[in-house]
Structures are given as C-alpha cells and as structure tokens.
Image 1 (cartoon, chains in turn green, orange):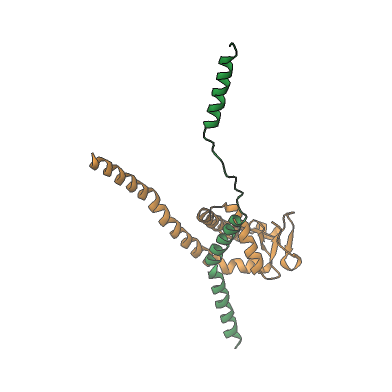
Image 2 (cartoon, helix red, strand yellow; image 1 turned 90 degrees about the vertical axis):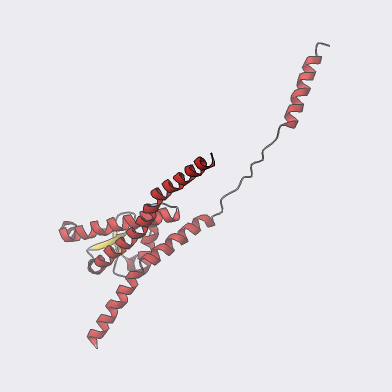
Length: 69
Length: 140
C-alpha cells in the first residue's frame, strides 16, 4: 500500500519516457570532394584571371621571331 | 495594414540592394583593375625573375632573392606593388569560392611553379632559394 504511489510514479515516468518524441540526428561525414571542389574552383578562377600572361608571352615570342626573320 | 507590410519589405530589399549592390560591382571592377595593374608590371617582373633577383614563394608571393635585390629600391617597389595586387586578388577569389586568401595563395604558387621556367627561383619552406630545375615538387 505504501509502495503504491512509488509504483504509480515509476510507471508514470516510464510512460512519459516512452511517449517522449525522439530526435534522430543523422551523422554525416562531409565528403572529401567538397574540398576538391573548392580547389578546382580556385584553380579555374586563377587560370581565367592569368590568361593575360599567356597572351603577353605569345606576343613577346611573335615579336622575337619577327626580329630574327 | 497591407500597405505598411509591403512598404517594410520594399524598404528591406532596397536596403539590401544598397548594401550588396555596390560591393558586387566593386568586386568585378577591382579584379579588372588588378589585372590591368599586373599586366603593366608583368614584363618587368618576368625580367627580374629570369635574372634571378626576384623569386616566388610557396605562399604565392614574390620576394627578393639576392642581397643586392633586397637593397634595390626599384625592385622593392615592384615586389611591394605585385604582392599588394596578389593579396587583393586572393581576397576576392577567397570570398567568391568560400576559402581563405592563404589557401588561394598556395594554389596560385603551385600554378606559378607548374608554368615557370627551369631557372626561376622558388623559396622553400625552410627559407632557402632553389631554382625550379633543382626542385621535384613545390613544398606546401
């Protein structure tokens, strides 16, 4: 009789726990291609920016060739 | 009531445009300005690099190789201007691609190394200068 409130309390606690919504967190490991993507993006931007170097070099080569001719 | 809400949204987007608009335009203009500045300096820089007075570092910047070059005012100004432009460029690309200027600098250092002639000097991580022909790969 004395244990009845305890039993009811514990039972109620179990009931609450079982009804508590659980949140499942999906653990995702970031794939390595994210870093590679950034590397590729940076490379592309640099190559695009420095295209003028190739043009200047080819202009210089043409100038040297015409002077030797 | 609806008018007040709509006005608030209009104000918000207008403020956003004011804050972001000039920055976007400024970025595109800045890259062009940097490119023009580097184009003007390119021939002189290549000459100094071919002579061995200026070299490239693994961080993507230029430095004087010889003690004589370190004392030469003209070379120091060339190096300072080139590095300032490179830093500005790295900042812009870093923002565009979601990385750091340091990372962009190192990637550019690799690009420069790949395209460089065999006689161009590169500074190793230990701080010693070596010509490309004496380096198997750029340490980063």
